[in-house]
Amino acid sequence: MSALDGITLEIAPGELFCLLGPSGAGKTTLLRTIAGFEAPDAGRILIGERDVTAVPAHRRNTAMMFQAGALWPHLSVAGNVAFGLEARGLPAAEVGRRVGEALESVRMTGSAARRPSELSGGERQRVALARALAVRPSCLLLDEPLSNLDEPLGLELRGEIRRVCREFSLTTVFVTHDRKEALSISDRLGVIVGGRLLQAGRPRDVYRRPARRAVARFLGDADFIAGEILATGPEGRASVQTAAGRFEGFLGDPLARPAAGAAATVAIRPESWTVAETAPAVNGLLGRIGAASYLGDTARYEFEAAGVRLSILERNPGAADRPCRDRVYAAVEPGDTVILLE
Image (cartoon, rainbow, N blue to C red; front, side, top):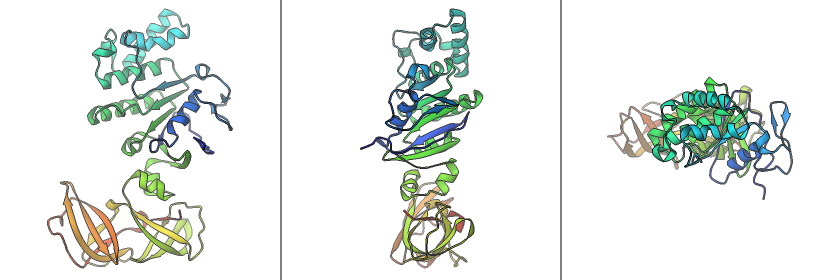
């Protein structure tokens, strides 16, 4: 079994690209292959115009930041940041200048003399980031750098990583299994499942128009309704007949050309539904609201229509205290209705 299966990926200079997927999907293997710690059985790896497929890791001019930071406990913060520079034989004055610049970039200048044991988890990751930046890599590789931090620290460091990468126009590959992390930090993201790159694109595009059911599921909650293609139109438009009714929407894969009668699945995010008392012009299901969970700024409803159960998320909810409402419509715009073929 291959850890990676025929992945072709191009990352633009200065882009922050996230590799997103479940544990064991091949994300870290791909990152280690870019870094030179793993050798591919086939294919090539280019950094800029340079083919580095057979180049050892220490000559690729990449820097890797690990999940746990991997700082030397016996060295100071400044000593940790200087380590890679000294290994490259740079003059002491140049090492000192780069260490200062790197610590300043992550706002850790005042902690240069401290030891890792005296730092918080977030501070240790800042030092690890400074160490990676100090060598001025062509490509920065981040392997789940926020997974060991609690949510407030993770949010803070997420913003810092984003800021630093933009400030230095640094090409960055960021591995994570956290969809919110990937959606919020990346310029583009790629979803990897089972060693295959299923889809890549801007976060908003991949979330709103997943090309596959596995992508739709991994990026968030969705209702899936089985049906068959009735017709297709320009710009990826399609209509589908389901047991709950007819839906107008857009193909997740705009290049697909399904024939009438082909099996299809309608995918709709819970937050895309609205509840109405009157029938909408298109994409409306007559049914009833069952159980409701009030969550403050939102409410989640169970909605039943023609034997189909849906999950509806309403912002600024007004119906959460009136469960079991009969004869109401769940409606969704065609632009929020994705037609999947696999």
